[in-house]
Every structure is written in structure tokens, then in C-alpha cells.
Image (tube, rainbow, N blue to C red; front, side, top):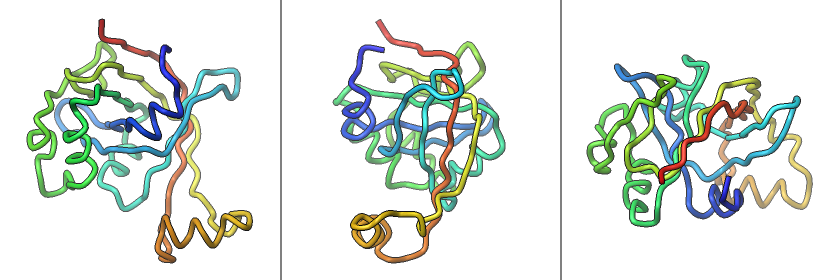
Length: 163
């Protein structure tokens, strides 16, 4: 993979998409990473259980992570601020749904698509945050409200790069 993963996810963002051609949802994310676990190339992402996309992640064994050029930054903003529960945010963002050869959903405009198969899901327990991060993270990221993120560790099964 030709990219700096920290820059790619944390600064350029990604779309997490789950479901199939008949029904899917996507959301912008900037929490996650890639590495190697259980002898498999892997991704890890964190999704709040209140997000509409979370329901699709629970129902399907696989999903995609899609990465875009900077000219799609506004599309990623739309997908990160609108809910697919009551809006066709894909249409609003001007993106074109694309079914991968594996039957997963992504977008024609993506420059890179990573297909992921779930291996492990766990709720983050914020009681385990270490100081001095605990207070700061709870205040900055959650505004001291209880909110649950699920961690999804997934095997990378395909990477598609647009030429």
C-alpha cells in the first residue's frame, strides 16, 4: 500500500461502508489504523453504536474502507455530518455507488478501496483510559457524556487501487 496510514486515516479520512447493493450505508471516519494481528493483515476502526452505519456493520460480515483524493473532501464532510436514516447522503455528496467484485459496496470516485472481513468486535470501556488522557479525552471527545464506541478488528481481504 503506497500511503502513510496515519496521514491517510487521521487527516484525509475514509468512508466506512457496509451493506449490499439493495441496502447500505456509509459514514466518514478518522479513527482507526492498520497492522498485523493473528497472522493476518488487518484494520481496526471505531464506530459509535448510535451511528446508522453501525447497524449495517452488525448485520454484515464484511465492509469497505474507501479513500479519496482531496477534491472529494466536501463529499466526505457531507457523509460525516448527515445521517443515512433520513437522507440520501450518497446522492447529496455526489458519489456513485460501486459494487466491488466481492459484492461489497464502495464508490466509483474512490482512489483506493480496502475490503475488510470482521474478526473481532468489542465495546471500548472508558474506565480503562489511563491518566492523564482519561479526563482530557472524556471532555474533548465525549463532552463528558457516556457514549459507546465499538472497536472492529478486521482482516484485509482485498485492496483495490485506481490507476
